[in-house]
Amino acid sequence: MTLPFISIIIPTYGREEVLRETIANVIQQDYLNYEVLIVDQTLKHEPETQVYLKRLASEQKIRLFQVEWASLPGARNFGVRRAKGEIVLFLDDDVQLPDGFLKAHIQNYLENPDIGAVAGRVFDRMKLADAIPGLQIEYLPPEAMDPGIAWYHINLVHTIKPQQVLTARGCNMSFRRDIFEKYDVWFDERFRGSAVREESDFCLRIRKTGLKIWYDPQANLIHLGEETGGCHDISTRSFKYQVTFYHNHFLMGLKNLTPIQAIFLFTKLFDCHVLGHPPCYKSGSPIKILTRACFYTVGFFSVLGTLIKSLWDDGQIYTRQDPSTQP
Image (tube, rainbow, N blue to C red):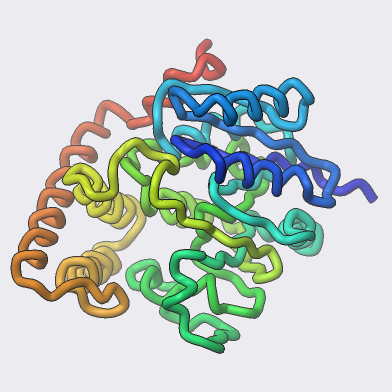
């Protein structure tokens, strides 16, 4: 039996050694029917990285694309339009894969034609020290399938049994290619900064096709969570980043949720990320709470501006810049 051809898309921005290590890890996988597409948003690499990428491209081990902008959803869409595979797999540029990783993703599609996406298990290196020793979850609670509150109940680190889920983690998720073209579901390029919740928005729209998002703990990787670089060009400490964090949550909610679900989401967002209650555990300093409340408020009005502008502009600005989409 011929195994499906898989397109591995790695958007990258500002990464050097860890990017090289990630790519080396990917091309050592024991699954032969695949391609690797690097969508590079870095304006200038270190010489060692530049030489490495050009060498792999000349050896046809990767397909290298350089773009002049930085947008995670834009880079995902750019890669999909050039992918040749029946299955599209997205990885971050700072991950480590175990042997058999690609096979684990593919096996799910072979076993069930109703599966449209596979969410892999993610071990966050930066969070492992905070993990509860020995914690294992067999099945996620019912709340994890409720779009209004799911985001605080989905645990794709400690869950050990395969099951249907609401969303995937952006650093480890795969999809049937025809989701994009047959169902015309693409990543929304209005998600800004680190594009938090862009994959959640995408997965919520997939569910409307009737296809399942399936969690497979065997399709696991380690997410290194490097503090610099990544797929965006905004410092995590900046005012702009903090505003876009809330903007993106509000955008996902207003696009996809019922009014009741949205109220639950926005209330929990305030309780957790502004007031700092569990599971966020942020500082209870009055000054910091007030500062986060300002970010929350500005983020809300920012998304209202985005939605008003969307009446005449769909926001897919990077797709419109792509020569492959021109008539």
